[in-house]
Image 1 (spheres, rainbow, N blue to C red):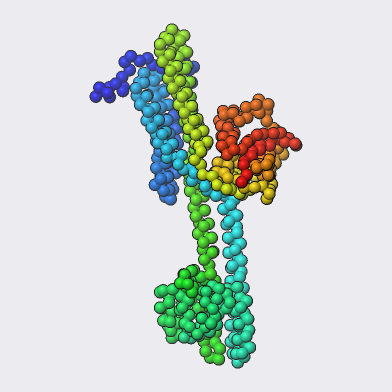
Image 2: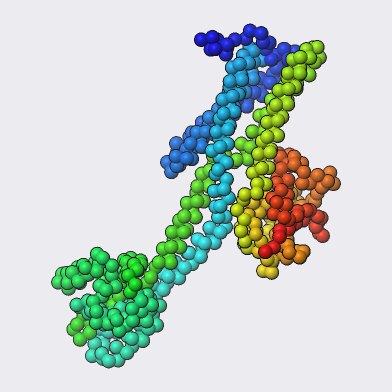
Length: 529
């Protein structure tokens, strides 16, 4: 009970309003600002909750991250409300507890979010998925056209067989020729299910020679349960005329000579020769097609996963907020210390300065953690095709650039050697440089972006990103790769610093130069294999 009372005790404390001399303008500024921030913070969890409830496909992990985000942002709002309260009521213990809860929520959120970064970086680019989808659609269209052509050929062949039943020898030679040229495997059986003939493609598909197949029951090409049931199916059709596959076509399983089972499309036609029924089977091995479809589904699923995570908020905003909190606290401490010094309260002013130093130390720790993450030496490095690596990274960075009037061209040299690199880190450098170039060209009428690779100095490969923007101002150029140096109104100034850290950790070098026709060219080198 005593502890609970101490939380709400104001004994020995002065309201924060004394620090600002109860000036109405400053009080209004603090109250309105903190209130607006708190309202904004409290509205965000509601949006996150509505999103999570509307998406039934979210996994338990994603819901947990959404809950942590909501808790963290709500706690931030509470701290701002407490900033208003302590202006009049010195409930500093309660205020500190609110900040402690916020700190715990921020740590839990950071722990949950950071491990997702490698998974996000491994996701293929939307352009790669679109290209794979386009190729699959073209293949499917070609296969459908081939099936239609094959169906037409089959109908024509059956009509010829029916019309020329007395020309058995000539028909047999023509049929053999057709079987050897049709792209799909073809097998002809009689009423007993015995194989009468098989095409050369059928030999390759099933692994048997014609001599091994002709005369044997077609069930030899089927796995269980079809192997034991086929003769019953055939007898049932001959007795009842009920069609289950003849003239319909379906996907079934086949069995090769080595015992392997594979998926295939099967279409069966019926014909009569001299009053005897025969059945022609058209077989297409669809193993590769199904594997391509499976891979496409996996890539699409991963892309949807990334979209869901992006809707919950960008990691960069959480990092910026993590920096803003201690800096704001340090600013408040220093402002209070200055006023205390004016009032001659040096001891309390020193205490305020000490607390400000602690908050600034927190900011430095955040930056050190980020630099340690980027520059750590245990990253996975292997031989990579730099042309492909740069192409994938550029595709990711150029999403939406065309709508902004940017004309991008890529000059990826086939002679540029490969390099032993961490793919994710080097692609991050490419993405950063390309995005910076797109943003730099926003005020320009001519917006042309060129991305190139070439063999550089002996033992190095060079990557360049050139734009047609206004170029670099002298004051920016002098501190270009220093942290917290940015020409953007909302930039943090750590992007190029991190790029340099990545490139130099790979043993390369990065620099900027003026373009021949204006704009800026960023170049960096990497050791070649």
